Image (cartoon, rainbow, N blue to C red; front, side, top):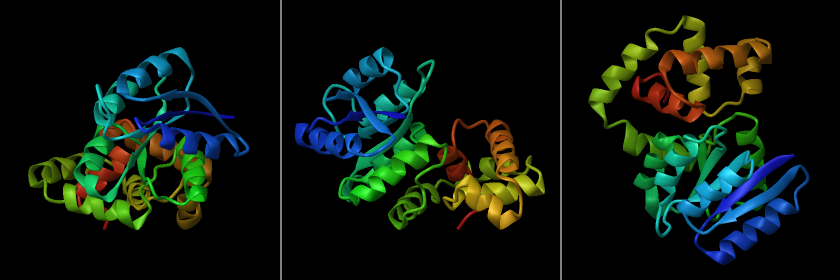
Length: 216
């Protein structure tokens, strides 16, 4: 069972997401919060596997909340909720440690799929909108690109192959199929890649890969 938390200052949004998630097999809504401070409190009181977090909220916004949630002893996976006019905030949330993001008008089935994918350790970087945001706000950071290439150079050729596919949003199963590897071997490579790049999750690894020019 995937234990979820909904964090949004709009009560109607929380109600709609709660109805959607609660009605799906394998997902349980264990907490709700109207701002970042409440989210920290709820995540401390309940074990949360995946948190859906809005960007703009009173008292503590979603970006700050993401940083704080990632610092908990048992941090939840985080999906940022946003709209197209919040592009740069989405980038900030991803670099803060979010495992992906969804637009608020995303199809309900895709929201459910996202929760399952993120809970399983994948990242929500595959949608075209995500790529546009990342390309727009990340590729321009030239000094960071130089540093990223230096870190990627520490990887083995096989690890760079895995990182390149990971940066495109491929799941472990997708990577295993394309590289003719066992999925368990892919998981081992991913763990080594995260450690070598000194990042906390697949999203940050993908951002670094894009900085280094390893992914389109």
